[in-house]
Amino acid sequence: MTDPKTARETIDSIMSKLKSEEFNQLIIVVEYSRASTDFYNHLEILERCLNGVIDSSVMLIINKAPNKAQLKKAKKENANFNLDNNLKRLRDEIARIFKFEFSADFILLDEVDDEDDLKENDNEIDQIRNLIGSSQSYKFTNAKKWSELMQMFEESKKSKEDKINLNDTVKSDLKDQIHKISLNINHMESQLEFINRGRSFVTDVKEAVANNPTKYLLKPAIYFSKKMLEKPAEKITTQINNLKKEKLNKEERLATIERDNTELYKEKEHYLIEINRLHKLLREN
Image (cartoon, rainbow, N blue to C red; front, side, top):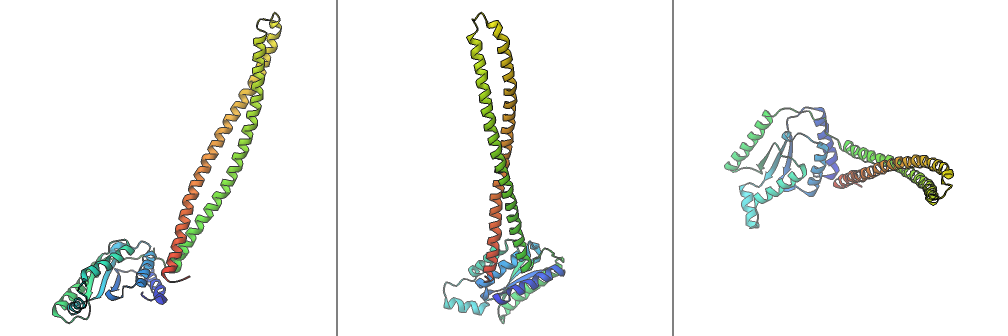
């Protein structure tokens, strides 16, 4: 998987097997001296294509680690050489990519001829065999080929765009409705203000004729005038209050849709970033 020209085909081949065949272990083999940037990039793509593979089914093997003779030579050439630190960096980088615990990880030495090294390698290989032999079989249908993964991201991005567009249509309708309701409220408030002026005028007339000998003649007219104005005032006040409630409900719905759109834009951007990042990891445009 170090070669950008073959990485996608290799990953797709692995995904096809995971989806169609039962398996006991997926073994990630990293050659100690060949853990290049390309390799890490392609591991990231593999991790995404695995799409949630069961942690206990993935094993890590660091292959061709320096044997005793090579270690001695490396330390002679570079006094600061530290195999443990190098292995830790390698493990940490792989752990960053995969974001889960491997079922186990092993180190196999390179070009073994020393008896102790040979014994150490044999012991590691026995452990690998035992782990595979005792592990249960899996069939992992969630695995995605490269094209399926990209299609999944594209469809997810498209679904967010469609939802945003639908929300924008609803938002536009809501804004029109809120505007019309506001105009109705303004119109009715003007009517109410006119009626209230009439009611105030009737009250002024009543007070003006309070001591007038003819007040008994005017009293019925004042009474009926007041009654005639009270009923429409109450009716319009009720309509205004109902319209204000309706307007508030629509404004709250509009605010909710705008919040949803903010999240949808973030999610859409996330999928777009993922699509671009995965293309970049394979050096594609």
